[in-house]
Amino acid sequence: MKIVIQLVLWVVIGVLGYLLFNAVYGEVKFNDLKVVRYQKAVNKLKEIQKSQMAYKQITGKFAEDFDQLIAFIDTAEFVLTERRDTLVLDEEATRRYRVDTNKEITIIDTLGFRSVKDSLFQGTDRYKTMMNVPAPVADAKFEMEAGTILKSDVPIPVFEAKVSKDILLADQPKDYVAKEKQVVSVEGVNGAYLTVGSMTEVKTAGNWPKSYGDAED
Image: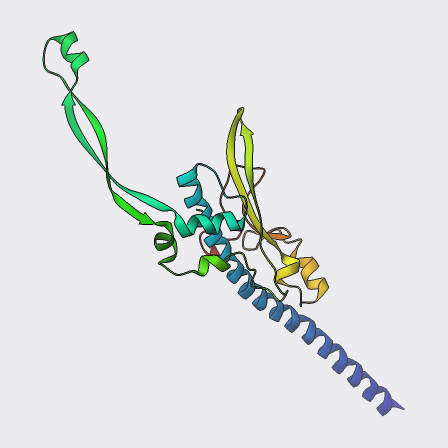
């Protein structure tokens, strides 16, 4: 009877050890996969971010949807300029003091034009797929919107692009995903979404940590 009890205990210990190993190893595998998928999504969000910044630089606002943004990249051009300082006669000061007086001014010369597509994407067409989320969900797209918010009664252009962690981790254990959506950490992606920009704040940065790359525009 003693031998039987010992065998049962060893079996129980073995099963518990296996379950513990699986729990720990399963979370390690989940975290490794999460980092890979987040990095791919962040790379896309950074392309959306720089495209939107170019759109605002030229038009004064942000694109409301991807069709608008892609059409802009296809056709828009940056103006290439050169700034130089020079001295000119300050006529008002010369009249006032009755002696020749110079003042410094800045002259901006137009040197030419360069397409946004070449500047941002080196002539490739990968911007045409930047809305596609690298996730196990078929045909998943980043959500994006744009508009204005009031700051001191002044309308300020804003935009936001995001993807839910539920989409990026759709094929992973639900308890792991639920825990990940509650993350509050300097080294983690806080909240339920990977996001760049904001519809409630004047910001164009992403919400990912530096380990995924610069979040600023």
